[in-house]
Length: 110
Length: 112
Image 1 (cartoon, rainbow over the protein chains, first blue to last red):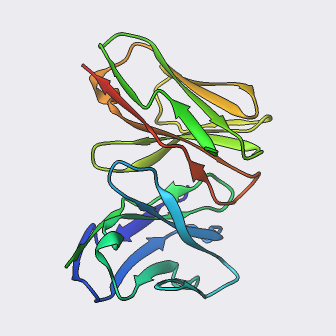
Image 2 (image 1 turned 135 degrees about the vertical axis):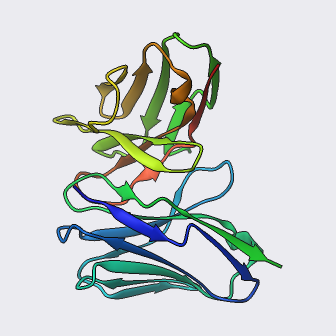
Image 3 (image 1 turned 90 degrees about the horizontal axis):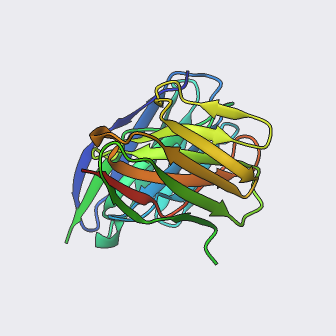
């Protein structure tokens, strides 16, 4: 079945710096790679996603890169702000419901 | 308008009780899900369901059962609650097949 490893589990950055979270997977049939942000006490919400026919996607300060050969994808947040502090989850899907990584707790220090 | 809504938001109950969590989506989606988020924040799929197929995660105890009166609703019934069932349960929905899923606000279940 599908499985995804997410690193790091915690990440602290200074405001204005960049943050990178990486996920690796094993199932080559995976073809959809979303990222979710979960603020304290709230639901996970989609922030960006990428499909297997695309190598990179950007939305303002957030970008996702995908390397299908190496089976990994990464979330990049530039110019971090305190409101970026949250738990971030990567997820994968092929022919099954989304399988989530274990999450990364990002703390942006002002 | 709340796209995926679930009730109750908070539930405190004693061990051994039976409880239900209701979920409704107004997005016109074909597939609904239940995810469990434990104290370590791990999100695990419990069930996915459309009007043709129920897929059950094999690790889910059979005390948990989804019930869908129609494609806009997927309720979760839990029998003989145990302390380890304490978690946040998220309902979610998506269009058919592989696509973005949208979560409800979560139901915080505490078993004492």
